[in-house]
Amino acid sequence: MIRRYLHLLYTACGYAAAGFLAMIAVLTLAQVVARQLGIPLESIELAGFCLAASTFLGLAHTFVNGGHVRVAMLSNALPKAGRRWLEAWCCLVGLGASGYAAWHMAGFTWETYIYGDLSPGLAAMPLWIPQSGVAAGLAVLAVGFAEQLAVVLTGGTPDYVLHGGSGHE
Image (cartoon, rainbow, N blue to C red):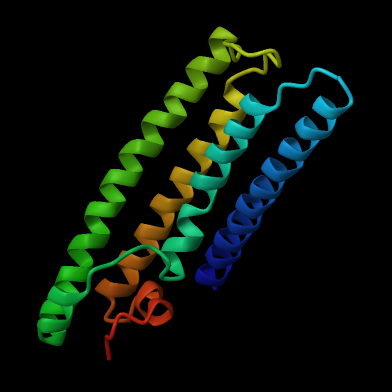
């Protein structure tokens, strides 16, 4: 039951990532039209914030659905038990790295909020707003690694293998 909710979370993050990509297109189009009308509009900074949010919010959805690049040559050469331990080790390393990054990004975002830092561009947006998307994306990725680690340790086939077509089973 909890896995179903987690996958809904990953899907929601995937849709949010797609929304931020669409926003980049809208901002770029608005800047082009404004330039043709002689209206000064600077959207590069906001588009960059959308790119960061899109990149990090899409990580967990892409991981769980087998979209990340994965070299399965070694794991395919191992027997099933060895493959399971290799997958567990990889998920554990991914959990450690993403958890570490999420923790520090969340702390950095909190500091930015406390100090009231603003972006240096014309928009002067509070920096904690775009940083929140990065921190949230990293946190959800860490949750995804933890979930897939649990699947591997309980003897199941991880979702990224089922959806990614890496040649297992």
